[in-house]
Image 1 (cartoon, rainbow, N blue to C red):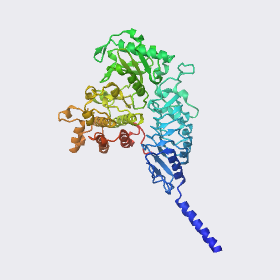
Image 2 (cartoon, rainbow, N blue to C red):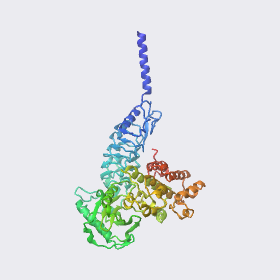
Image 3 (cartoon, rainbow, N blue to C red):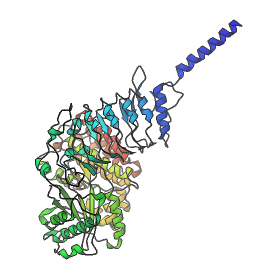
Image 4 (cartoon, rainbow, N blue to C red):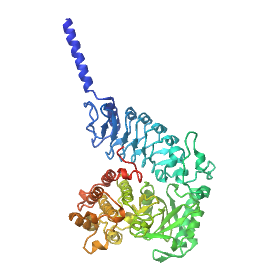
Length: 604
């Protein structure tokens, strides 16, 4: 009997040992809890199995060795829905969490504070809600924080200022509000870290905050904002901005509508100069015309109607900064030195004004760091006006091909920064807007540059609104021949894949420094795509790259040309999506040489 009991006990012990040896690690259990909170409709996480002894071979997972603790979760572009489970806090050795370009919603869990070794947090381009948990300020090793293009709200927690290792911050294109805390490391980041949050104010974006009485609050000198224990941060703010006063906001929406309506009336009619080849007679009585209408998207014109009208009355032909297939663009400068672009739409579309205005409201709600911000619309009896942010360096076409490079030449890194930002903006239109927006007219003159060479895609959605279905090939698109996909020229049907083709041509334009229909191509009956195919077939890549790019590694050139070749494939079905293009560009461009120039290396 004793022998039998001993054998039974031994068998149970052996079973327990074997079971323990094959049991999933605690980190693996935490990952399964994360998976349960995700909505993995494509079953891309099917390799995450409880039967495995550890998660180190699972999709997107890397581990520390030999302890098998999870080091990295890398799951971008996986079409994941659902939420981020608080179980993320159980992964205490996690260094990198990359869940960008998915469809996650819900809050950022405060339990992330337990990931004390976290260095990089990429959550951009989801639908995350709520506020930034102040606990993120406890992640002392954090070097990269990208929460851009979400639905986050509330104020920016001052605790982020204590992250002394933070070298990249992107909170753009959310709904944050209030004053940006100018403490610690937060004071070192530029406007691009916060753009697209209409209710933010403060020194980092050079926008005055208003007191509870509605008057502009005086912004103190940067040195006076330092908190005890946090050294003051040097800034290069302009003193005239700090001393400027923005005249009170519009008292009511009704006044705003009538006023700005009037402002644009006078703007259009008051031009004594030449507009788009036609002279416009100024007649101020139209300001009160019943046919006038103003829409300020999201209250995004922080001026009284009188201020705007005053500026529009002064517009003349000397204020023209551009013209194209859709109309003439004017520059207006407000008293606080903020600058806007006013585009006069030449095409008459009175028969569909209601649809036109509805579509414009949709376009006005589209916000992204790499899209030009549409601030408002004004309908006048004689014209239609669109109000945009003004981009100081103008179009890429002008900068690349005319005299824009005289002061600041576009080297290879700058061009790749422009390519990457343009791809992000276009991918956002295709994949993150609902319904998706096909641009139809991607070209270098529709890529506008700010002073830091950050690209902004312009005129998105306008081609669909302003071009008749039966005439758009000859009246608008023919003006940009060379960017057009073969199938678009053949049948006039614009799709996301025809945008991809145009973007591929834009890539080649950046690499070569030549317009798609450069005379050197045309003489041989080619465009830039055919010319490139000829040179690569003859192994003459040294003739491809613009000499102003500087010294560029041959492998880097070939990688970008390969992406451009995929984009310009004659068969649209064989072209990648813009999300695919963006992913390839991020992998190729985010190299150490670009870390200081643009964004941090993605290998963290």
